[in-house]
Structure formats: structure tokens, C-alpha cells
Length: 102
Image (cartoon, rainbow, N blue to C red; front, side, top):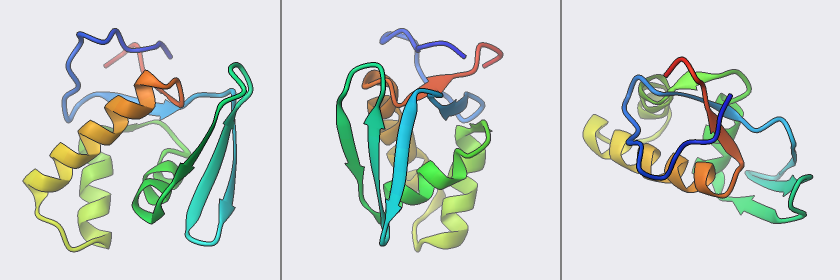
């Protein structure tokens, strides 16, 4: 797994995974995460927590979006756009990494 260069665009085929140095705990419908490397902590709302749970194994952004469409009342284009934006943030803060095969 590698960190994504900031200028490299994500696509539905991009495979992402949790960074192995992230500690996390489910708290009600949310997730609290701590980066071992940086000491920073993060909180995810219920939708973010669902994405985090889906990333228990590496998955493509397209697969993540398809799974969320089944769970939440959202159209495919909006879901893909929002998931891509969210993952871009998680990649930027080091919580998620991109598979080199992507």
C-alpha cells in the first residue's frame, strides 16, 4: 500500500484500505480513530463509520459506493462523488492508503 500523491485522481477502480497503523473503536454508530504514527485522533459519523467498516478488507471505490447505495437512500452518482471526496480526505490525513495495483 502506498500514500496517494495529492495530484493523482481517484477513480471507481482505485483500491483503498485502512492504514495498518490506525487504531479504532466503534462507539455507538460512530468510530473513533487514533493514528499511532502521528498521535492524531479522528471521529467518523455513522456514514463514515460504515465506510470504515467496509474497509476491513481492501476494496475499490466503486465497490464501496455500491455497498453504500444498498444501505443508504442515495443515488449512484452522488454516492460515488461523496465517497471519493471522503476517501480523498482520509488519504490526505493518512488514515487510508491506496493499493499500488490501482
